[in-house]
Each structure stands twice: as structure tokens, then as C-alpha cells.
Length: 87
Image 1 (spheres, helix red, strand yellow):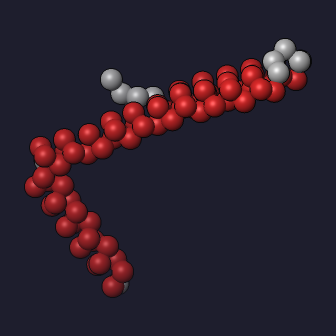
Image 2: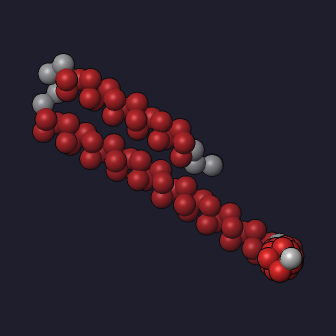
Image 3: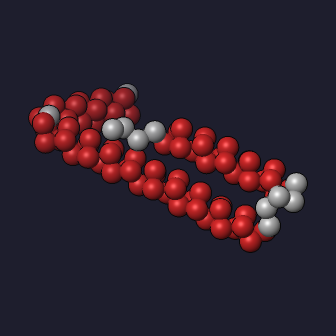
């Protein structure tokens, strides 16, 4: 499953905004706000770590399956850059 960091971040901000409104109305005490914010940050952190693990796994898999292609494209990129810089 592909982690959706953008959706998780949007959800984080939505929940944070709801918490802010509840605090401003006096429905939630400051101590509870601190606890909930810490919890929301932990949830978002988990999603970020899942995204990084997914990306690193994908890069690793691509490297293992297409090593020659990746090296070839890298060489072409370096040569193109060198050619553009020297002109």
C-alpha cells in the first residue's frame, strides 16, 4: 500500500484546526490541547516514516532490478551536465 503523506498532512491540519476552535470556545482545556497535539504529531510522524520506508524500498527494488539502466542514465546525465557547463 502506498502511503499518502499529503492526505495525512491535510488530515493533521484539519484535526489541529478543529482542536483550536474547540479550545477557543472553551470546550477543551489547555492540558488536553497539549496531549492531543502530541498525539496528532505522533500520528503524522508515523505516516512520514512509512512514506520514507516506502520510498527507500522502491529505490532499492529499482536498483536491484534495473542497475544497468540506472548507471547508464547517471552516466548520460553527468556527461550532459559536463557538456553544458563547458559550452
